[in-house]
Image 1 (cartoon, rainbow, N blue to C red):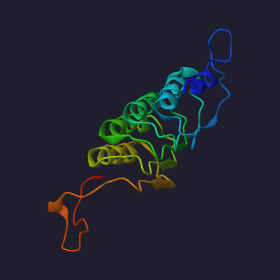
Image 2 (image 1 turned 90 degrees about the vertical axis):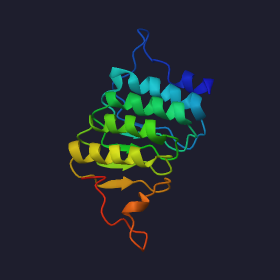
Image 3 (image 1 turned 45 degrees about the horizontal axis):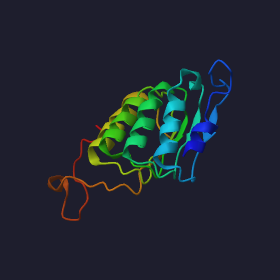
Image 4 (image 1 turned 180 degrees about the horizontal axis):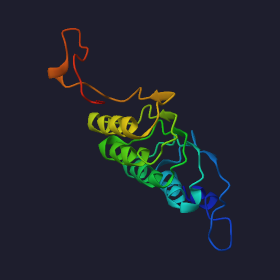
Length: 166
């Protein structure tokens, strides 16, 4: 995972990162927590503010690294496409993503498939999406262990009335 950190070292002698990166795909490489933390450090750099397309999926980043990435995304308000599938966000990471999404008024594509999200995180994400973004073109929450409160379910197991996104 040290190699990921070397790859993402600042390019200029003054320590800055080029401001021209608009699309960054870092997926299916099994970089784990080391890769996730290196990506989070890169995303936290204000010079990455022009990023519009981020694919950070299939990395096997654990809870801490996924939370670091989610928290760093609040600096990236230009994002239109965000693929964070197959990472481990849980409640804390999902809530940090909700904070970041509130800063992304141009977001149109969001994939959190297999993100280990929990119900509370999905509610926070729903509120963030509804409050800030124009309608998304794509939203993928598949593969998360989500369930309705048993009191909200009808006999067929469908949610009768949920204010999760109201």
